Image (tube, rainbow, N blue to C red; front, side, top):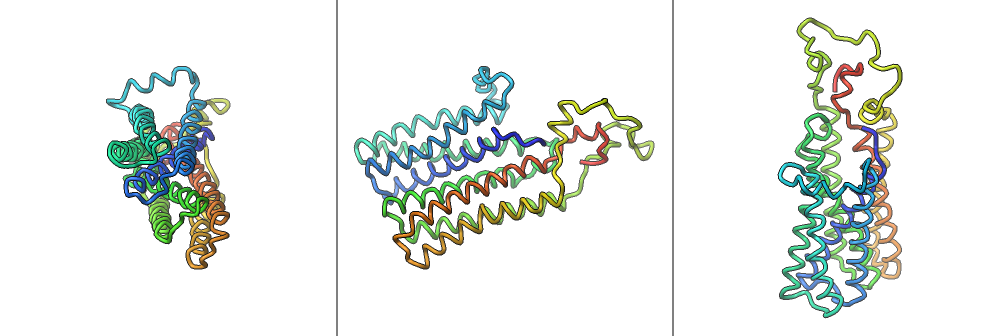
Length: 316
């Protein structure tokens, strides 16, 4: 599939934004965060900025962005529509949580309920984002049960790294935050490694003979190209990345998305470098986000649509 940069940014930004929001809401309910206006404004501000810019970015991929509102009407059958509904619904509990946190310095009572609702709504929104791709049987690399858990894990991982940077910036970073973030990063890496192993080894069940209905007569091959030049389907559905380049980009995604952030956070954890904790945490967050951008580009570039069976590809 042709990687659309607007969609790549959308999935990465909203994943990180909702992931950060989930950690903020959960820790706020536990009383494990500074309930100061400055921290609440910074934390909720960063998370919502990522979410809003991501949602706006997604509309630029549409042919008629002004009609994006129509996506909300198909929530009974469309994961895209459900994602939009929950994305908008999340703003309500976030506003209540922000009122209690920034104005009143509280996260108990009704504000704790709002925090729980914000965390659940954010989690469901990311789940719907993953299901948009997992529910497509026409793309072998996406129609796997681990796709949605990976979206959730990467969102929580990048959100956790952003949380560490915020905590370090406000002098409230504890070892528990670092250890939790390292555990989430490790879990996300294991899921992504399992995903790549699966798509590399899974059999290609869709064949050109089945697509044309001529497989019962023997080997099927096209005699002439279907078009004199590439059309929309070939450009969008037939994008291919060379195997050697894909392997290099996978290593880059692992290094930037997991290894470098983990190494920086371990340095803070074991070295007790309080003065350097904030810059190291910021570098870890920047590296994690860059790694997820590479991972998400590959997620689209390595996907093969069955439509290409009608354009000469033997299997998909």
